[in-house]
Length: 464
Image (tube, rainbow, N blue to C red):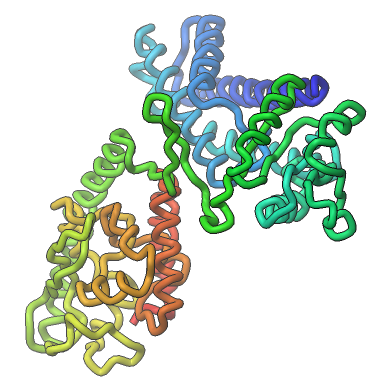
């Protein structure tokens, strides 16, 4: 155990040292390059060097290194790298400004931030890949045992064995049903045999999957683990029916489990998202929307009778109804609020088909964003008829309304756009909308916007 802890500490030390080497090397390289072109000069480089590294360590306190964990998603590595460098750069720039040396360094700090953010991201992704490969080869693994060979125990066994990069060396199972001896892999004995086994084998972690009605036995196992400095984890019994992550919280000393993490419950995250929505929508509405409205409006008017904008009741956050705006892409008809557009829909005009294919028909919804009914990114708002229908057929359908609907969303860039012919297609859309709600980050929003813009130029086969 001590050796494995030292390996983790050594790994963190390597990552931190690499961070500092990149931080200082890039800073001084950029500084001397820009100094040669602009004549900008920092008066005392030794003082700047100390401030630079202090700001890194201060930022690291709030965004600690997590690359050594068993499960780290690529997207989180990118997000945390950008967060760390953003915090460090803002702090560093503030310190330089207090030293009265920052007035002519704006260009330098912009270049420094971009280069550092990209370099740190690439460096940490490479480190994570190296760690996974290191563990896949069997090095630095933690010795674990599973108590209970029921459905949860076997599911845990499957997860551990399917990906060796998690860094687990499964020693085997303990279960009181001795009939399983010749059925399950690595049967080590009854639960009471754990103490004797641990005396002769090094165990780093115990995963308990036995039912909760064995509370006395679970308490004994926990006490044994703590006396022997073994980390102890409980897989809750209800996991066999609720196959999803749960969030632990406390009401004083009473533990509470929530079925999902919602990053947008944080006031800061909501403020960040709303600020971006307002700034981004104002930019679009003042720069791109006026000429688009003039050209698209003229073509819509000559293509068929009716208004330029189409207004429809849609379901918003918490089930509230709002008026959603779009460029009109169809001839005036009685089925607009009840029937989805389909491929080769005879109601769609020629200009309407182009607007749909390029997503340009959605641009008036930036007005909805500015009004606060929608967000730039979020689950697409559905017609009231669809909300009423699918809320009865799909269990988690209404969960998607815990956040504001968006002009584009995770489901859309994953291919779930346009007509939903089958219940399975709508379930797929809802599944991805709920995933977005549970995994929101500012960088995820930026990624979705970027892919949406790319798709606007490529065109989408489901956009009709």
